[in-house]
Structure formats: structure tokens, C-alpha cells
Image (cartoon, rainbow, N blue to C red):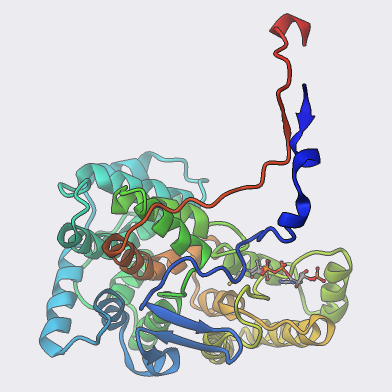
Length: 386
Ligand SMILES: CC(C)(COP(=O)(O)OP(=O)(O)OC[C@H]1O[C@@H](n2cnc3c(N)ncnc32)[C@H](O)[C@@H]1OP(=O)(O)O)[C@@H](O)C(=O)NCCC(=O)NCCS
């Protein structure tokens, strides 16, 4: 007899389906603490404020991978390895030269990372030692994919990494064709630090779920990139800039935001699953956005942003997240809007790989359940009778 399972289920047994897994603790981790009440972010023991003020991105990578700060020799060694590994196999440059210049940069980055597995002798080796070496290689190589694609689509010569300076330095060089000044390098470096790790966010969860099947690191990072790309996650920084770009000096910003809220639209760069107060990363980015926008004569961007922040607070009591002010920071640096999520990925690779290794050490297949509410025992209907 045909039955709808819904009629058979005692729904009282399922008073609450955790749509979005909010508040579910599925792992233990020593990588980061996101305190949504206090608005505090800790990477392996160190407050993000201290790291943003004092560390380099490479130092933060070491911290996330080893859960301690490196000494001078260790950092020098890591910097050297990360610099030496920056170039891509010829085949990947060839893919980038021949791909559709209108592709989304995140899609090209996702394909490029997946292709890197084909040219990595250790791709299928999921031992911790090989995974660590691959983590370094992926962290080193991602900036070259992003910059090469951008220059190809602009009709410019693709630049190979100089293999000198920091990841931030070489990335800005490959992107712009000139060595960045100390301030631009420092700004990019701080952005990478602020985006490096953030607990069990959607892309890190994706990476851990892929790792848990004992699949390899390139697969996990490729999946994580797909997850980060969405506008509810890393894609939000690009969406923020696209929103700011439609404004002009005559726009009534308050009415613009209220109109969107009345239409039940989300305002990109606001809200967070965990932070119920100001995102600590947004404080640093807000200060950087204010200074940089002024420097390049685009104060209006910061002014509009602040007005949006105020309406969102008044109307919804929702604060900006990491993506809101990073958009103005990157725009003021002259970086094309659709590259912002790739820069997020260039940083988050450190967190993804650190979590992958942590998952490997204490692995169990990740497999939640869904409550089936469909029918069962339907009689088979031959195709010609449907
Ligand atoms: C981040 C985000 C996906 C978290 O989602 P979530 O925890 O599932 O929260 P919800 O989407 O259920 O939102 C809860 C409430 O806040 C509102 N809200 C959350 N973020 C909002 C936003 N950016 N703009 C307007 N309203 C928002 C929702 O409309 C909802 O209101 P309601 O209860 O009156 O319906 C969500 O805040 C969002 O979509 N933000 C915009 C995208 C973004 O910036 N993402 C980057 C995150 S770092």
C-alpha cells in the first residue's frame, strides 16, 4: 500500500530538525576559537588583534599548522619553502591561457587547484607528512593561479612569481606587474591574516567532510573552494562591492538599505552565524578601509559604508562581518571586484589544510541523517503510462 512516510512518523520525536546545523558540535579542534558573544577570535591561543598587529601571514600559517609560533630559524625555513614553491607547472599556465576569459576567477582557481593534483607526485598520499608538504605547496601556488588568470583576461603578459618576499608581496607583483610598496604589502598581509581561519565555517566543514572519507588534500581544497565561492560565505565580499558600486552621491543610502530590507533581501557583508556582536576582524578592516579610501580620494566609499552600518544596526541590530570592509580595502588598492573571494581563499587555504591534518589524526566518516518525508511503496509505472 502506498504511504506517505510523513503520516507514519511520530513527528513529536523530531520536534526540531537542525536546519543549518546551528550550534551542533561535531568536532573538537585546537585551531581557532570564535567567541560569538564576546566578539573574540583566537588562532591556536593567540588573539587575532595581536596577530594582525604583529605577525606575518606566513607566521600565522605556521601557527595554524603546528599550533605554536615558529622561532626565527623555523620561520626563515618556512618562508624559503613557500617562496621556492610559488611557480606553477607549464600545463596550468597553458590551461589559464586557453580558458574562457569571462570565467569566474573562483571557478578558474577551483579548476587550477584540482589540476595541481595531476602534477603533484604525492597527490594520492594521505600520510600526515605528505599532506603537510602538499599544504605548503598549495599555499604557495594559489596566488599564481589567481594573478595569471587576471592578467590573461586583461590581455597582459602572465608574470611568473619572483619567488622573493612574502606571499602578499609576490601576489601583488604578479597581479599588477610591479613590486608593491611596503604599505600595500603590509595591507595585503594583514588581510590574509584576518581571513586565515575561522572555526567550523562552511568551507572548512566541507574540507573536513571530504578528508573524513580518506580522500586527498587537493580534493578537499577543491571542494572547499566550491563552498567558499557562494555569496553567503566568501562570495559576500564581491557582492558587497557590487552593491557599493550601484550607489552614487545622490543615493539616499538609508532609503536604499531600508528598501532592500523591506523586500526581504539580505545585505551582503552583514550578519554571522556565530557572531552576535561586532566581528573582531571587521574592526581592523574598517580602520584600514577608512585610511586607504581617504588616501586614494574615495572617502565616499567609507562614508557610505558607515551609513549602511548605522541603518543595519538601527533596523536589524546586525553588525558588519569580515566581508563588508574588506571590499573597500581591496577596491582602494585597485583590485578588481571579482578577485576578492580568491584573496579570501589564498588566506583560508592555511585553515583548510590545518583542519584537514587535524581531521586525519582523529578521523571518523562524517555522515549525518536527513528525515525522509516522502512517499514509499509506490507502484511501478511503465514509462509509456506516465
Ligand atoms: C551569514 C549568514 C548566511 C548567516 O545566516 P544564518 O545564521 O542562517 O542567519 P539567518 O539567515 O537565518 O538570519 C537570521 C535573521 O537575521 C536576518 N539577517 C541575517 N543576515 C542578514 C543580512 N545580511 N541582511 C539582512 N538581514 C539579515 C535574517 O533575515 C533573519 O531575520 P528574520 O529572523 O527576521 O527572518 C547571513 O547573515 C547572511 O546571509 N549574510 C549575508 C551574506 C554574508 O555577508 N555572508 C558572509 C558571512 S561571513
